[in-house]
Length: 320
Image (cartoon, rainbow, N blue to C red; front, side, top):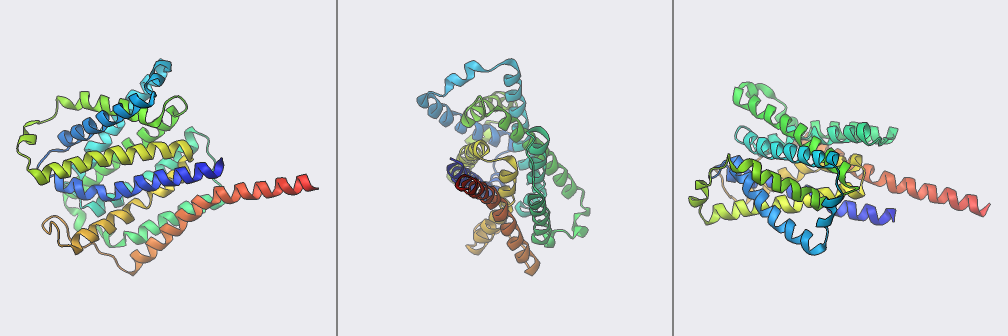
């Protein structure tokens, strides 16, 4: 059972990380034809309709009938925090490049792991804590070309950085609230409520006239953002059901690696040269990538290794 949970958790969180890694490209493109609030409303609308159909035909909507007042309050707060995360991150991309935005969002895995320890009493071994330390080191090395803040004296850059950290806090709060609800609700039901709440709350702040000015390419970008929302958050919610927050948070550290790789791929194809340029990746960055991947792999293998060790001890005890 544990092995099956590990495989399912790995599949779901890997998919989420992949889609989040390529999302900043689409969000950067969208900034030229639609504002963040209206785009987020559209993403939530598409995700709500598809999720509602899936949950209706799977018979999971009945779960809402067993919720108590405290559960509804958690759902509402989770929705507010995720809305704030969506909007603030897209606004930050007006001031920061995708890679730099991902750099500053990488405090999220550590906040999430800390939240798991604080609210869910999850324990981290000395080896796991060491892995998180090496993970932080790998990130610093990976992003070292961006750590020279001499160009960051511009007030707009600092505004973007503050927006990203606000986005991080909002996202972490949403993730922890969602995990606390998973004993009563299917992950997709949590997201279904959040999407519905977002549609209602943001409707009054949307500029729907922008949809009439969008071209075919613009629509494809907006639709991709919406599908990305559906897949990435659906898979993330499912992974929280099968894995502890410490393991999930460690995998999130791979998101900027995918983001930089996808940006480099777009640049190599010569697409949207006015929007994207080559990222600075030097030897230290490559070493940082290696450390990040090694730390993440070790963090994911530790639970399986501990389980096998416990099984071996049990077998020896039974044989003796």
